[in-house]
Amino acid sequence: MLSQRLSNRRLLVDLLALMFGLGAWIGINGIYVQLPLLVNISPEGWRLPAHMVMLVQFANLGPILYTLYIKYSAWACDKYITYVLLAAAALSTFILAFFYQKTSIIFGNEHSTALLSLMFVTAIVGCTSSVLFMPYMRNYREIYLVPYLIGEGLSGFVPSMVALIQGVGGNPECVNVTKPESTEVEFQTYYPEPRFSCETFFIFLGTVLSLCYLAFLGLNNLSVALGERVKLPGSMETLPTDTKAPPSYKTNAGWTMSKQVYSYLLIMMAIVCFLSNGTLPSIQSYSCLPYGNVAYHLTVTLSSMAGPLAMCLGFFIKTPKVSLLTCLMAILLVLSGFICFLAAKSPAPPLQYTLIGELLVVLSWIFINGLIGFIKLGITTLFRPDPGRGLYYTGVATQVGSLVGAITTFVLVNHAKVFDSYSPCSVLKGH
Picture (cartoon, helix red, strand yellow):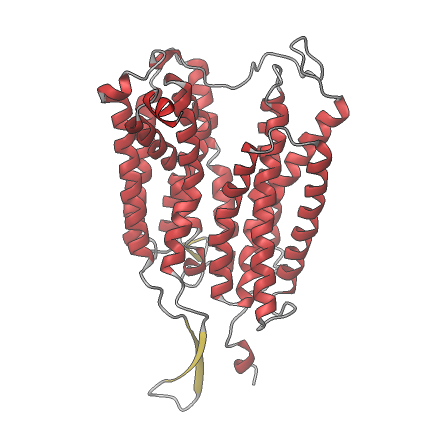
C-alpha cells in the first residue's frame, strides 16, 4: 500500500512544496521567537511585542493590494509576485542580522526602526501568502497541497526548535557597578549570553528563506515538477468562495446551519482572533518576564509549537461539534483571563520567584495556543462545506477581531500605561 502511494507521487515535488510552504510565515515567526532576547536590548523594552502586533495588522495591506490587483488587472503574474516576496523576505532577514540593533529618534522617542521596518517586510510576505501561495498550489495535483500545509505548519515549529537550542543564557542578574569618579554604588541588570546570538539566528533564518526561494524556483522550472501540473499558471482560482453569493444558512447543496449557530461561530472566531492575534501577544512579556527570562523563553518557543500540533488533531476529529468548541472556548477565556491578571499584576505577580509560578505561566500559554489552534481549525472545518460565503465571513471575522485586539492593547500598553515592567534591580535601588 505504501509503495503504491509513493509511486503515485514525486518525492522531490513533495519536498519543494514543503519548502515553499515553510517560506510563508517562517520570517515573522522567527523574529517573534527572538523576543525574549530582543526586549532586553530594544528601546521599546517590554512594549516591543505590542508594536510588532500592530505592524502585523498593517501588513494586511499586502493582501488588500493583491486583491485589488487581481480584480482590476488582466495581466496574471502571480509567479513573479511570489518571487519578489520570497526574495524580499530572505534579503530583509539577512539585513536584519546586521542592523537589528540600529535605532533612531522619532517624535522625540528612540525606536528600533531597523528591526520593526524589516519585520514589517516579512509580515507582508506572511499575510499575502494566505491569498497567493496556497492558491498557487492549485496548479499542481491535489496530493501536493498536504506537504505545502505541513511546511506552513513547520514555519512556527522550526524556528522554535532552533530558539530552544539557542536558549537565553539564564535569568537576569543584578550586579553592582562603581564608576571611577564616584563612590556611589550603582546597580545594573546583567543578561547572560545565549548559546549563539540573534545575528546568527537571523542568518540561519535568511538561509532557510533562500532555500524556500530556490524551492519555488524549482517548482516552476524543474521538469519533474512541471510534469505534476494540472492547469496553466494563469488559470487558477484565488478565492475559496464565491464572493457574489449571498450569506446562506441553508443551501441546495445539502449544507445546513441555523442562523444563530452561523452568527455564533463567527463571533467566536472574532473573539479568538481578538485574543490570539491582538491582545495576548501584546502583553505576553508582562505576564512572563516577572518570572524570569527562562520562563519567557520557554513560553514563546513551546507555545509556538502548540498551535500546529493541536491542528494535527483535525486529522482525527473530522467535524467537531459546536458544543465541544463552546467548552474549549470557555476554558480559553478562563486561561486568557488568568494571563491578563498576571500581566496587570506586573512587576509583582503571584508566586513570583517560585518554580510553581514559572510552571503555571508556561503551561497556561501552551494550553492557550493549543486551544486557539484547535478552535480556529474547528470553526473553519464547519464552514468549509458552505457553498456560499461562510469562509469569506470567517476571514472577515478573523481580520476584524485581530485589528480591534491589536489597537485596544496597543493603546493600553503604550498610552494608558496599564502594565508595568519589572527590573531585578528595582528592589535594591529602592534601598
